[in-house]
Image (cartoon, rainbow over all chains, first blue to last red; front, top):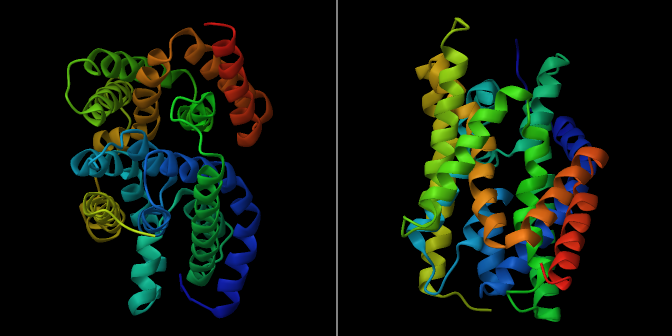
Length: 235
Length: 101
């Protein structure tokens, strides 16, 4: 299979990702408003969105934000939430190889769920143009930075106290994200274990992010144990 | 427009960790070919992670948190629209709070 990277592909990626950017708007606004409420300046918020470019990790880190900023907690949140990006690298490796120099590292640094899903759909359709992926990443990145900046401005304008019910939108984002992740009844036990461990540890551990990670790992281990034992699935 | 050194350090740490994870898939995982168990763990992680975050966050808010979380879940399932689920979930939470729950 010959992978190419064309300008036409880049434009096609921009066009394909445009409707997906609409889906980013609610998350972007929540991130921006939350960042403002947690005391981040407009510059700090923009910097985080531009460099981290991962909505779920940003919401989780911002929920745990304090003064002074919790460096270890934020890094741990980013690591745990973004671990899934490591799984996307191997499937896109052929496309990254086709890109040269800074474009390749921009493509690697821009791995996100939407762009990955779009690239997989292209691969399955037999199209091998890495430009499409780069175009999609560019569109999503621009939309992400723009909506989070808008959210921060909105937050500064209305200046809600941190206890306002509107901030329930942050945990609600994760509840909504759970729905497409449900792959049937085999998720029930791992998810129950994750919730139980996180609840039990949230009072015991000094760092809230640690309880989240403990619950997540315990649940994922249980799920993996069930799937790899008994059913004898090959590699 | 300003940036506090601790916030800046936290943001840069998040960016560095995230870039490392993204690059590790391309540079390392493609050669290692992880076994079925490790793959299964990584595939389960997004779901269990969000559950582990959401469960204490909802419980901390009491009955209102459970009402809001339940409404978000049902609306997301029924409509498939994130904005609808978020708006409905926040409204349900707000109403429950206002109702003294």
